[in-house]
Length: 272
Ligand code: SAM
Image (cartoon, rainbow, N blue to C red; front, side, top):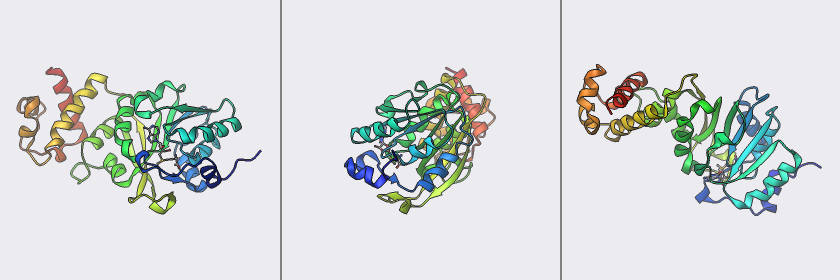
């Protein structure tokens, strides 16, 4: 039996978009297929999708050769329609009824695994930071954010978007903005433009302790981004760290390269 259209599915299940859950649905199969294709050849891969909603992107993921697709959805109104979709793909589509913020997504499926998702924008940044903390678990992340956030993830030092998120992401991964999507592509259209960032983790990853040390350095440095580093890093012994890292204490956070932040994080960890 063929699947009903996404619009019919939404209507049949009363899945009116809820703002509180960041619901903006993609109903165009062509756009969903282009997002799914950002995962590259998915043969033998597990794919995790956060927030499948009515399942447009899920259907596109199921059209790839991925060995399994695990979808994590918090909205109970979507669960029955996802179960119906799973009936069409026995043993390949797994529906996880949970808050993605409370879940270790890497435990869902065997490696090699990827995340491909049109994220709920209200929780997209904490979700990404959580996955970066365990970046070795992921082969690739292809994630839709609001455009400004995707640009911040990929921003170069000295640019206005460069900040904590960009340093963390680029320290752990190679990041690029792969696809820009206008508001009209969604139902209902969001107020902002969107983009998919492709994030490919490096082979070597920092230890959890070093990651925490980097989070501390970047939070302090960009928390007061207009101040000189000797002042913004004071709470973590800034003058001494900067001297050891051979970084001028009068510089500001946005001028430091990711490699310079990495040196500060290592010294911060060593000084504990
Ligand atoms: N993937 C669908 C699409 O592209 O049409 C829907 C994307 S919509 C932007 C975000 C989805 O994430 C919604 O289905 C929403 O219910 C779900 N969601 C919101 N917060 C969530 C959370 N904390 N955990 C899991 N899913 C969540």
